[in-house]
Structures are given as structure tokens and as C-alpha cells.
Length: 120
Image (cartoon, rainbow, N blue to C red; front, side, top):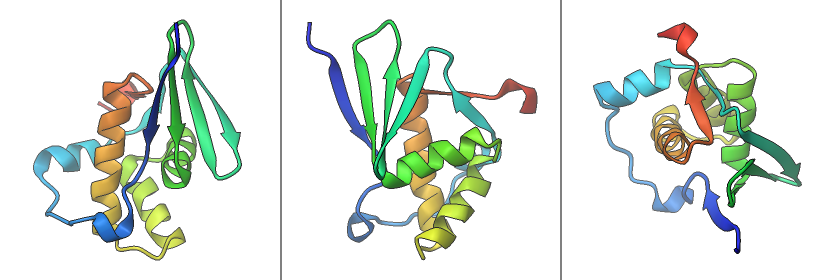
């Protein structure tokens, strides 16, 4: 059986349309996340590969998604990580926060990340 492969990360800046942060998104941003127990990561240049052990799922995280995972792994909230990324990439905080919400939601859905429940 072939492994399933997905590319995950922030969209191109030119394709991003910024909308206001909703209350649900604000809740996502205020939380801390960690890699799911069955996930291992490996950095390959500017990107990162996340592999779910025991499944056929492999995720190629682009440069900004890889940076997000690193910052979350340091114990930062999603909003703290977004603000760091905004500074590093000279982007607006609001645009990056929207991208972080989208990326975190995808990684949660795919069981790559999980919410740190100590914060809830």
C-alpha cells in the first residue's frame, strides 16, 4: 500500500484574503498545542515532514507550517507563535493569525497536533 501524502502550510501571501478573527478562531489562538503522541517529525531544509507512526500518513509541512510546529513545540500559544512568524516574515499579525488558525485546524483534523489540555 502506498503511503498517503499531504502538503500542509500557509497559502501564498498573494492568495490570502484576510477576514476578521471570529470568537471560535480566538479560542484556537489562545490554546497551546503539541504533536500527537503517534507523530514524529524530521526537518528537511526549510520544510518538515510529520509521520504518523502506525499509519500510512506523511505530511510535508512547508517552511511557515514547520516554523509554527517548532514554536508550538516550545510551549507557545498559537497567537504567540503567529506573532513571532509575522515578525519573521514581515507580514501582518492578522493575516498570519488567520493562516495559523487554518493550519492548526488542518493539523488537528489530521491528528498531527493535539490540544494541550492543561490549559483548558
